[in-house]
Length: 291
Image 1 (cartoon, rainbow, N blue to C red):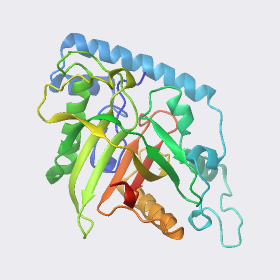
Image 2 (image 1 turned 90 degrees about the vertical axis):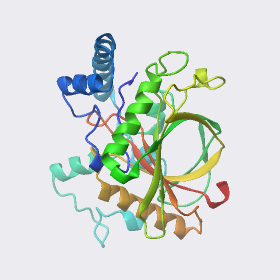
Image 3 (image 1 turned 60 degrees about the vertical axis):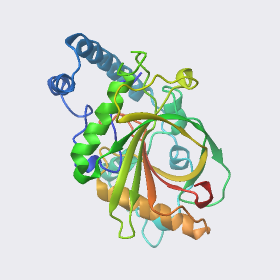
Image 4 (image 1 turned 90 degrees about the horizontal axis):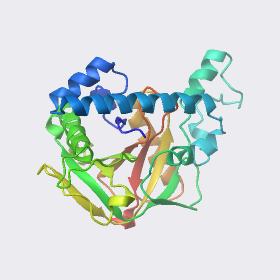
């Protein structure tokens, strides 16, 4: 399920999606340019078609849920831009309502019922505008993103990890795709990005003995459990400005309840394939006491 799952994260605006939103010939060209054999390309494209059929069926059967269930938390009143000061709705038209609905994220439980998610526990911490989550300790396959050229560095990082799960490992085994695709971003006091990582969660079946990467730029890391605070949103594709807006909301929401986060790092997470069905992307801050 969703082997060809592309990335929606902080740098989506700088990255033409590796698969989502491109046609079949472009996908084939990109696979060929990245060293995949003709046989592997045929297999991947066939799997992609099967995945798209499954996604279409899911879209037809999808049941709408309230916003708080979709996001996983109650929204803060001050972030409800669609309401006027007098409390009435600005929607007024079907097109506006449809646009607003398109930003509703896909519920996490719906996603994790179809594809393996990194293990987590939802925490009962009061407040609006965010969810508190404990990401449990687990092994992840990781590569560095070259931030001197964000667009090129991000695409190169994706391909390194994609090759790893498609056999570029010591056991030459294919590994199922999981979610989320994590981006870790470090920045300085002026909010300039100084470093980045991309990571895939290693499925439970391989957790005890993950295959060693054959690319020196790819490595397996054991991540300790960590408490994070997240905001979720839909829409396709989100732009950089929208990620920044959501990070601002998250910072404000946490400040409202006196939560302090670890400075100098943000996390982005993509759970869904861009261009197909309801989306779920998240921005996260790490709890100050977790690092």
